Image (tube, rainbow, N blue to C red; front, side, top):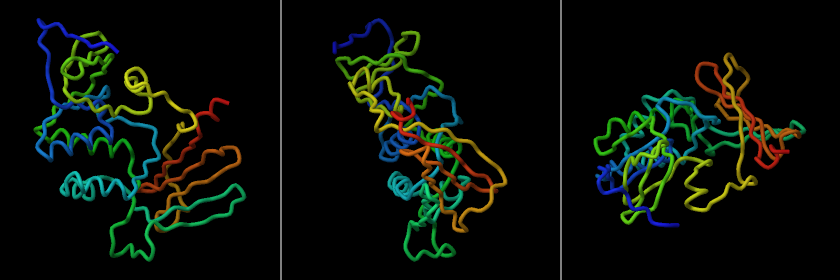
Amino acid sequence: MGIFVPDMDQEIATSNICILGAGPAGAAAALYLHHNEYNCTLIDKAVFPRDKVCGDALSGKVINILRRINPALLDNFYNNLPKSDVWGIRFVAPNNCMIEVPLKIGYNKNKEVSPGFVSKRFDFDNFLVQEVRNCSKIDFKEGLEIGDIHKSKKGYVLKDKLGNVVIQTRLLLVANGANSRFSRMNAGIEKEDKHLAAGVKAYFKNVEGFHEDGFIELHFLDSLVPGYFWLFSLPNGEANIGLGLRADYLKK
């Protein structure tokens, strides 16, 4: 891979740290840097709020990460994000045999904070982006699609779809998902269909019959193995219902 030397007559914005992708990974990285007094630039091709295909489930690991970024961020999560509590998982086999696994043994939902949640990806991603917008050390550029990335003498140079130089950065964090062009073209990482899943989801209203403690449901149907059918309860009688299937089987 050659070294790109930008036109020195062209004024180029610079940043010590640039993050490509403002989904949960990129936004969390930017918030962590801000909380630790580092400036960064965050870029995303979308304008928020925007939606993504997702089951919408948030595990206890998400809670721990938010706490590590900033305890105040976790307080905002508890107080301001629409979500439903999840205390366990209900697994259903192809023969309709069911096993229920609590996320915490001996829990008391009346006295404890639930170990997991379901929140619409639309709301959760926008919650993080709103936090980003309130951070003085994060230069957030949304609605900006990066078309090309070159290694330079000082790090990386990013161009937009028209070939205009957008920014030069010393450190580039790429967090733009499974279809990342950088991963394929610059890092040489190809997608592996055996380790990639495709999904389709829809929201339904007035759904009843969920576990009283909000257990999410994973149904393993003969026609979907290796994959599953999910039913995740949301507030106000809504549910995220979808199908996930390994990419190599989807192509068949």
